Amino acid sequence: MTVRLAISAGDPAGVGPEVSVRALASVALEAPPLLFGDAADLGPRLAALGLADRVELIDVGRCDPEVVRRHEDHAASGLIALASLDGAIDAVRAGRAAAVVTAPVSKAAITLCGQPFVGQTEHLARRAGLADDDVTMMFLGPRLSVSLVTTHLSIRAVPDAITAERVRRATVHLAEALVALEAAHGASITVSGLNPHAGEHGLFGDEETRVIAPVLASLRGLSPFVEGRLALAGPQPAEAAFRMAQAAVHAGVVAMFHDQATIASKLLDWGSAVNVTWGLPFVRTSVDHGVAFDAARSGRIDPEGMIAAVELGARLARGRRGGGA
Image (cartoon, rainbow, N blue to C red):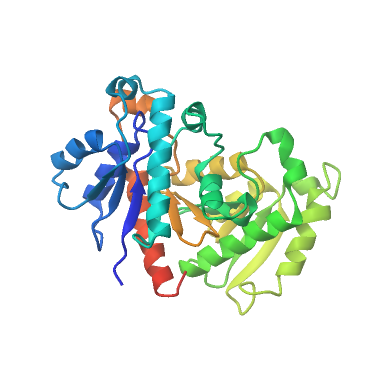
């Protein structure tokens, strides 16, 4: 069965529209993708790259060109970004596409338009009828694959959010993704600690001994942590976990909080890591960067992240259609 992608072009004042069309010019797809956004802005971009007949452009409304030229948070651009995202989600849920690929949005801009918004990952979960905790944010790259136990929280709130169910979910989802991508052959996943030195036997916090270690003990005998496919290590000091993953000792890392994961991912795989939401009833991939108003303002726009997101979205969708994901 042919795989079609639904792509949201993101915030029209950021780099989303440009990286979207440039990615589509660089990737050979099985079927014309659905591209959601401001058609008055996207149409000329597609035509300039010879894509007008290769992309089904779906207009979600017009953003004032003056707002676009400002390249900053604005309710008008937030409204278009949210409409684009919802249009892509609706297309997948209706069976018109097999995967959602999202360009970056501004959480602040969407909130300004009257929609409380903490992130695309959480919005996707809710639109799919799931709780935020039913899905996992992960970044899959050539040098590092990492999943997140918690996502968009203040650092102050993180320790109380490290629960057994969240650790279990992020660990199992990362294992499923690595197996689906055939990225794990007798390798291991390691789970990082929350505290310095993974708590140093309780000296610097007890999340490791009280929550994380018991979860890992319960998982080691379950699929996919059996039959030699994946070993499970940890809790391990975060700096050691990421260093060993970079050296290919581990196939992936489960991180406890947002920046613990993203600092490592952006240092090792900037421009090539893909933000994947695992646990949805459909495939979702995205770039690993934000709206980049400064890059949009200067015109120095790099589409490599969106190219990687489109390619992986198509690959995962093909795997799911074939039963592999």
